[in-house]
Amino acid sequence: MTRTESEMTYPILKVLHLLGLALTFMGLAGVLALKLCGGESPKRRWLFFAAHGVGLLLLLGSGLALVFHLQLLQTAHALPGWVQGKFVIWLLAGGAVSLAARFSRQAELVFLLFIALVALAAWLSLFKPF
Image 1 (spheres, one colour):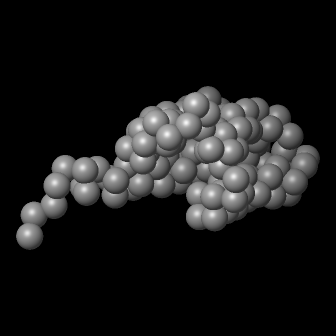
Image 2 (cartoon, rainbow, N blue to C red):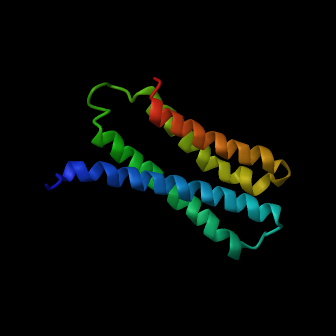
Protein backbone atom coordinates (compact mmCIF):
# COMPACT_ATOMS: atom_id res chain seq x y z
CA MET A 1 0.00 0.00 0.00
CA THR A 2 1.59 3.28 -1.08
CA ARG A 3 1.03 6.60 0.56
CA THR A 4 -0.01 9.67 -1.34
CA GLU A 5 2.14 12.76 -1.34
CA SER A 6 -0.31 14.51 0.99
CA GLU A 7 -0.19 11.66 3.49
CA MET A 8 3.60 11.87 3.58
CA THR A 9 3.75 15.67 3.76
CA TYR A 10 2.00 16.05 7.12
CA PRO A 11 4.38 13.85 9.18
CA ILE A 12 7.41 15.43 7.51
CA LEU A 13 6.14 18.91 8.37
CA LYS A 14 5.49 17.85 11.97
CA VAL A 15 9.03 16.43 12.26
CA LEU A 16 10.49 19.66 10.86
CA HIS A 17 8.36 21.66 13.30
CA LEU A 18 9.56 19.58 16.26
CA LEU A 19 13.16 19.87 15.04
CA GLY A 20 12.73 23.65 14.92
CA LEU A 21 11.36 23.58 18.46
CA ALA A 22 14.32 21.54 19.70
CA LEU A 23 16.90 23.75 17.97
CA THR A 24 15.28 26.97 19.18
CA PHE A 25 15.21 25.98 22.82
CA MET A 26 18.56 24.17 22.77
CA GLY A 27 20.00 27.42 21.46
CA LEU A 28 18.29 29.43 24.18
CA ALA A 29 19.40 27.06 26.93
CA GLY A 30 22.94 27.02 25.53
CA VAL A 31 23.19 30.82 25.50
CA LEU A 32 21.88 30.94 29.07
CA ALA A 33 24.30 28.21 30.23
CA LEU A 34 27.30 29.92 28.63
CA LYS A 35 26.33 33.20 30.25
CA LEU A 36 26.08 31.51 33.64
CA CYS A 37 29.51 29.89 33.18
CA GLY A 38 31.11 33.14 32.09
CA GLY A 39 31.49 32.09 28.46
CA GLU A 40 31.59 35.44 26.72
CA SER A 41 33.66 34.22 23.78
CA PRO A 42 31.84 34.74 20.47
CA LYS A 43 33.57 31.61 19.18
CA ARG A 44 31.56 29.53 21.64
CA ARG A 45 28.27 31.40 21.50
CA TRP A 46 27.80 31.35 17.72
CA LEU A 47 26.70 27.71 17.73
CA PHE A 48 23.85 28.40 20.14
CA PHE A 49 22.79 31.61 18.40
CA ALA A 50 22.84 29.75 15.08
CA ALA A 51 20.77 26.88 16.50
CA HIS A 52 18.27 29.41 17.84
CA GLY A 53 18.01 31.23 14.50
CA VAL A 54 17.76 28.10 12.37
CA GLY A 55 15.21 26.70 14.81
CA LEU A 56 13.07 29.83 14.56
CA LEU A 57 13.16 29.66 10.75
CA LEU A 58 12.18 25.98 10.81
CA LEU A 59 9.36 26.67 13.27
CA LEU A 60 7.95 29.49 11.18
CA GLY A 61 8.35 27.77 7.82
CA SER A 62 6.97 24.42 8.89
CA GLY A 63 4.23 26.07 10.95
CA LEU A 64 3.03 28.11 7.99
CA ALA A 65 3.26 25.03 5.76
CA LEU A 66 1.11 23.12 8.27
CA VAL A 67 -1.44 25.95 8.27
CA PHE A 68 -1.73 25.68 4.50
CA HIS A 69 -1.64 21.87 4.52
CA LEU A 70 -4.47 21.74 7.06
CA GLN A 71 -6.34 24.40 5.07
CA LEU A 72 -6.85 26.58 8.11
CA LEU A 73 -6.98 29.75 6.01
CA GLN A 74 -9.58 28.53 3.54
CA THR A 75 -12.32 27.99 6.12
CA ALA A 76 -12.18 31.45 7.69
CA HIS A 77 -10.83 34.91 7.07
CA ALA A 78 -8.61 34.76 10.14
CA LEU A 79 -6.42 32.10 11.62
CA PRO A 80 -7.79 30.17 14.59
CA GLY A 81 -6.88 31.63 17.97
CA TRP A 82 -4.59 28.74 18.85
CA VAL A 83 -2.51 29.40 15.71
CA GLN A 84 -2.35 33.10 16.55
CA GLY A 85 -1.22 32.15 20.06
CA LYS A 86 1.54 29.97 18.66
CA PHE A 87 2.72 32.88 16.51
CA VAL A 88 2.93 35.09 19.62
CA ILE A 89 4.93 32.34 21.35
CA TRP A 90 7.23 32.24 18.31
CA LEU A 91 7.80 36.00 18.65
CA LEU A 92 8.52 35.62 22.38
CA ALA A 93 10.94 32.75 21.71
CA GLY A 94 12.71 34.95 19.17
CA GLY A 95 13.14 37.74 21.70
CA ALA A 96 14.03 35.37 24.52
CA VAL A 97 17.61 35.08 23.26
CA SER A 98 18.25 38.59 24.55
CA LEU A 99 16.95 37.51 27.98
CA ALA A 100 19.28 34.52 27.95
CA ALA A 101 22.25 36.64 26.90
CA ARG A 102 21.67 39.50 29.36
CA PHE A 103 19.91 38.30 32.50
CA SER A 104 22.02 35.53 33.97
CA ARG A 105 21.25 36.76 37.50
CA GLN A 106 17.65 35.72 36.97
CA ALA A 107 18.61 32.50 35.17
CA GLU A 108 16.04 30.43 37.03
CA LEU A 109 13.21 32.74 35.97
CA VAL A 110 14.44 32.86 32.38
CA PHE A 111 14.69 29.07 32.29
CA LEU A 112 11.15 28.78 33.70
CA LEU A 113 9.98 31.16 30.98
CA PHE A 114 11.49 28.84 28.35
CA ILE A 115 9.68 25.86 29.89
CA ALA A 116 6.42 27.82 30.04
CA LEU A 117 6.68 28.81 26.36
CA VAL A 118 7.19 25.19 25.27
CA ALA A 119 4.40 23.92 27.53
CA LEU A 120 1.96 26.58 26.30
CA ALA A 121 2.78 25.89 22.65
CA ALA A 122 2.27 22.15 23.20
CA TRP A 123 -1.03 22.77 25.01
CA LEU A 124 -2.29 25.00 22.20
CA SER A 125 -1.31 22.41 19.58
CA LEU A 126 -2.85 19.44 21.34
CA PHE A 127 -6.08 20.95 22.69
CA LYS A 128 -6.76 23.79 20.22
CA PRO A 129 -8.86 25.57 22.86
CA PHE A 130 -9.90 28.53 20.70
